[in-house]
Length: 395
Image 1 (cartoon, rainbow, N blue to C red):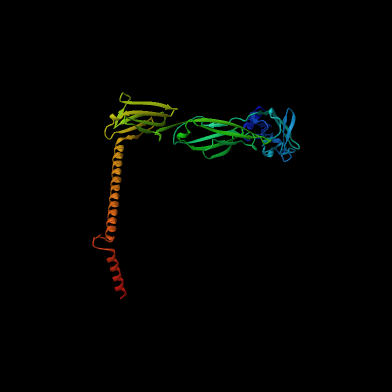
Image 2 (image 1 turned 90 degrees about the vertical axis):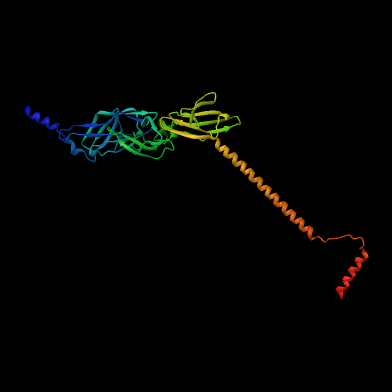
């Protein structure tokens, strides 16, 4: 007899044996937005002797304090919906319009012949005034500019018919969304974003927002953020300039980088430092910007002197010529040549005008009739000459 009991016990321990029992599998407490719905993952098992009673007549019922709040056979869409197939021992249910305020729900299987209340375990629905904050991964972001980063944002989906809507900080790019089932059968919605980080993202907040809809059309949102820390090599800004006076040259070099760069000045290849001859001052602009100003006397600027700004940090180094007095000399020469060319051109034009005026004056003088005043010529003689001429023409 004892051997038979031992054998029966051993058989019941075997996987797939017929020694089953009534049991239900429910998740731990589920947090849900007040006014929304909830999907309760549920599965069950029964003793093998009742398998034939598990048929289309079965209904899933949910109770609070022994009071029925849902019956899958009579429920309206506004009350909820059975998502599982009871003949496959699946009892997952979406519940609407029920009192979720820390209520404990008990599942009962009601068939035509088989009726069984699964008093243990139960599931507690915890109603919250605010939705849960999404989980942002990674939680911190420290990268070098140019790196491609994958960000993910996950938000619980306690109600499958009203999953959260996830959005990212604008301008980051397109994302892909998926639903994932956790070990306790609850669902999580995840949005994945691939973004290339630039220096412009440094100290900028990257956020993801999970918006939940309520049954009445209202929405509630929760946000998670992280601040990007981006390292990038230095660059010299276009605002770097030089100004000159007859006595001195003043140059400013503005640069950005992370880590904060260091600025060095070079005159004709020689590194300069603050002294009575060269005045150098620096001022920081935030944690990545630096402005360095140098003043050099004109008397210390040699022929064809070149002043260079160098900005360096642990990532890289960059240099830029900010002043080159050989350019000024070339400019002076070019200006002088231009003035001379203009003056020569003006002189040539003036000479040409004088020649033209002289030629025209001479031509006018040669074409005019010469009138000589002789004392022996009288008006009567002229009249006689004209009359004779006319007589000859008539003849």
